[in-house]
Length: 180
Image 1 (spheres, rainbow, N blue to C red):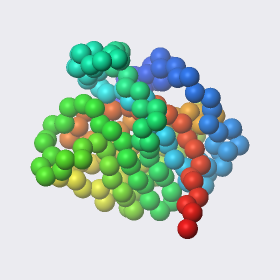
Image 2: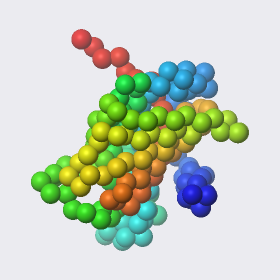
Image 3: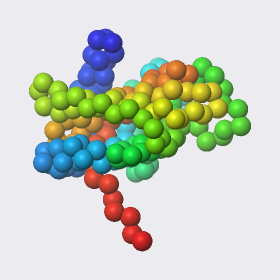
């Protein structure tokens, strides 16, 4: 667990994005405390980045280094007190094939989940989310770990029992009010 934590911190430090902070400290504190926010994914870091890089280098506009730019793609994780909704891509190796499901990615809606928030020593939060009612074609159990800074930058790591882990960089934003 300690090496996994070090890997995620290294990924966070090595990946510098050209984004401005989306929220200030007070807003970040408010949305974390209210458990009402959206994690907006801007970069994806698959575990088997060497394999992904080989494929991406053959494509026009090659993007090497294992990082996949998701800006403008609308991939996110919505968290409220009563639900967690994931709409994220997946790049990596699945250990069991999905039968009859052509959508792919990490897409689910959960109303039954555990939510654990821990304050980091140097500021920020580590949030663990474990959906209990999400079962897809191969009964994947997802474990989401969200590492949030005080300014709203975040790293989301998604672990599944049937896929290699994947890490996303992004930021937290307030939930948008739906027009009726």
